[in-house]
Image (tube, rainbow over all chains, first blue to last red; front, side):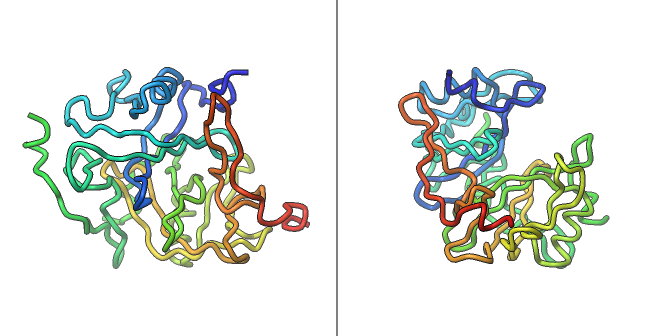
Length: 129
Length: 129
């Protein structure tokens, strides 16, 4: 049986994906893949997601240049979540978030408020021109 | 505005949650929360999820004793994914997975197959009695 058939895809044919930075183990982002995106990710060694808002494949970094080199693809015990170990290319330190931050998870709950605590590493206006 | 109102809940009133181990930064598991689960998680400092299969709140560790102490609650740039920093209690090293493994992400794609590569730390028959 094909390894792609072993995934418990959602009714929409998607699987949630966590991208984790190799080395630091920082969680960089969360996105979705369809079958084609995951197949391409494995084949190219570069993260390819499925954009639900744009309803199409999204080669991570296609606009920003912030490509994710994929070292490892993991699957969870229920076969319904994928974990990627990646190197975030295109900037040092890596920028995974469209806000120009290292990680999308830059806000922390403090005193009953979400507070953005991680710095913007590059102006998004300079990333998406 | 309430911090819970700032979350972009799914149509089903849920939000995906990644649990990451404080210190190692290992990704332990992925689950879902509804509003009540997230409120309780923040209040108790212990992870409370919403079990979609059982359609009820699931106090992590209620059967296994493998409770998750929550140090930090983060939200992503789209306000639709939560990241917890936790200490996995009840066993040393921590067991987050119902299979008795440290993490739910114990299978890796190798030569076109999902191969379980992380060890079982405790027999699940001994965990769920």
